[in-house]
Image (tube, rainbow, N blue to C red; front, side, top):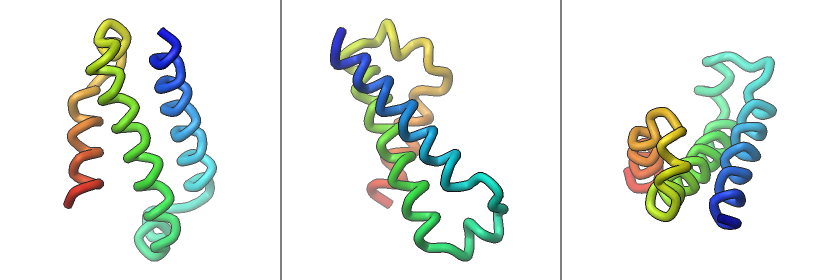
Amino acid sequence: MAKARLWLEDILEALGHIKQFVVGRGRDDYLQSELLRAAVERKLIIIGEATGRLAKHAPEIAQHISASRQIVGFRNLLAHE
């Protein structure tokens, strides 16, 4: 499935960006920087969206992502709360 591959690539890319954003930074840095929080949260939303699409359209692949339901739930919380 070509789309499933793209969603997996989206997940990996977003994870890589989060790692770049937070490397060398601590909890206080995160809490004090609205920019950092917004960037990390945006990437978490992307991860949740891609995971949700995988679960819907390629459940045989999504089943290999541990806690996929929690990931999607967390995305919904970030996006709507």
